[in-house]
Image (cartoon, rainbow, N blue to C red; front, side, top):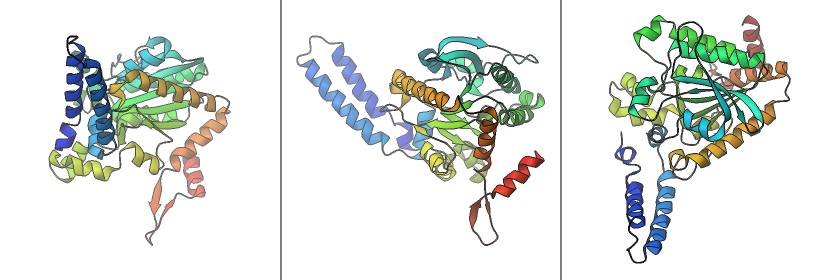
Length: 336
């Protein structure tokens, strides 16, 4: 971890502590003037820091302990939320939250990775790393949404699926694969948004949809920088090098055509103004719902399939890299 990454917020926190001290000292002469001056310095500092972020800095922001989890967004932007539990087979995985709610006038199923906020909650939610029953729960509720013609909103925030022996014994890889396959076929609009970490198959297990977008300081990658560094360099000390090579930031993913949109965050990232971030996220989701609601199911499925198949590239013998030709996509589709 770079020194910059480790201490990204330190100078800002120092100014905020000075402001708080002035606010709590009514006897201080010209306190309001000094507070105003410090607020100005804070804004300038935030702009300077957040316009010069490295990929690994962005990773640290996506993991910030105060970054709003799914539960915060649900409470801030979803009305009449009713949580749904269990996979009707093994148990209720708390790392995945599902439930019905409303975004303005639009009813939808909400599915998300739940990390928790306190240490106790993070342990209860397994730090947002789902087990197979979590993915089965998500799929069961998504099929329920399809039955009642409700759109699905998936909020992704996980370092990856649970890799322990118990999860593997209960079919972790199979559960994720089934979800990916089934989500391509669900005849209802699906909106997927990465709000923090988008780690590997853990993210893809609820990450196939008609819209796939990402918050400005979130990331999505086939592997974490630390995991990549451990494999390639045999040391997590090279995590920054891995982050630079993986092209995992929101802007990288947009340029590569992986995500549809980079959703802007408040100055200083989502954890500095959760309500503003929730408002922006809700407006984006409502816009997507209105765009997708009148598209016929068959057209929706065809567009969804092409969206993901067109992300693939191959290299010719002469070194040219091209999109997959349409006839190749059609052939693969007929095989499936």
